[in-house]
Image (cartoon, rainbow, N blue to C red; front, side, top):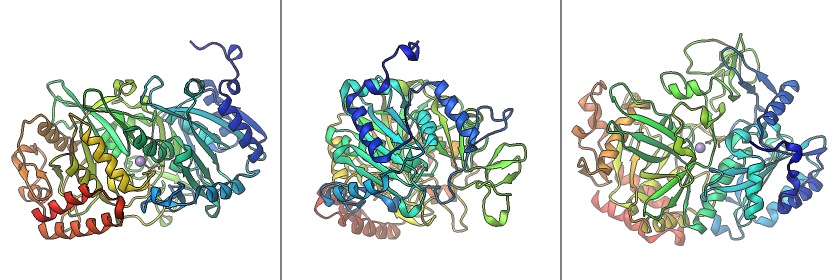
Length: 589
Ligand code: SAT
Ligand code: MN
């Protein structure tokens, strides 16, 4: 048990470095008060009550959704803003063609003008947080300063935040500095700036998830990917799932998919009745930090403590675990409301929306009732399939890495890389249809290497070289696969049922890793032999299966040509080995 608060050292006295930084930000932003977040439940309750009183949070139906609340964001602040997100390194080359870049001094000057006096009449919250288990040597820490109590509530769920994190910071001295203000929520005065060389983040003008919860994409991916390169590990946009086979053996997979392509569903997969004896355990649903272990394997932790997941589409059929998980103690953002105060979203078969995500009377002519990027924030521990190994200080060992995108055509259901360097090419070749998770057009195919296009904090050329280097150091590297659950037939119908049935494909991968089944060599990699893929009870025609496992050499020659053109855009930073892998594929085609 923690000692009563009055007997404890006041938080500002724990770390001089943090206190000095808070003082300088206080001077700049001029808040009415400064409040250090202890991380207690009483504190979260009090902050929640305060937001309910000020009508920023709505209490949801306490019988059906106990402990749940609804938050409406500003209507123009509902997704990440990649066009306003910058990597500010001294050399533009280090940020690479994959990032928007600004000179650090210029960026600091610009942000200072935005932050100056911006917190008058507001409280400045100091949130020390730890990404990863508190006792793990693989974890890293940060402090977010924000004027948004909604951000505080989210950070308390999404990270290990509070006094314990600050004590760790005081001990090792290093932390990522994240300064955030909602500003005026004006899209014209909005920037998300990253300074990897200084381990700092400055975010202004948005209260939305990835723009404002700085522990998530900003720290755990953009800054961490930079730190990881310097320290010899990988910070990736991957879920981590443990699959226990009927023999009782558990293997862990880390899988990269772009935002809003089903990572949370895959992480919480429900084995279908047709695959008795299998169990799935969630370690993480969005981010994996992968470290080479002393045993030559890759070990993963989930730096987060909660899920910030897409709500629409969640129902007992698509994701029973998630549906159950978000029925209590969940913070909903931008969903609709029923007459009896229950949250409602597209994909629910029961209930009827009366107010839309902006709190207006629901009118189908104005579009969906819940925003397509509406979100739930919930503690990972609420997940029925939560893996107890999520808390292991050394992480979990990874058997396979999986890359996937959302593609109507081109990519087969699954294929396996020939070896690690070829697997890096598979990752680099990821392309996907865009989704509502970021502002912009939805449904257009864009390149999204390793699902990291919006999140890699440095030049992709250097990043691929780092991937090659990490693989070369692993005596027992995981195998690397590519999947596409989203392939469609000529009529536009999905060929593969997806969701829990994806376990059939994952089981094939594990059979491959265990050396139990062979594969068909193809120009792009190894494809399943149809008989090795368990499709019993699926109602999948032979033709559909053949289509799912087929590659069209003509289409692939074009795909390789496009990829080659894209890769060559990285100039001298592009690893020669990656280009050689592409050439080898082209010659096989
Ligand atoms: O960036 S968020 O964390 O808000 C959502 C996503 O894009 O995965
Ligand atoms: Mn994500």
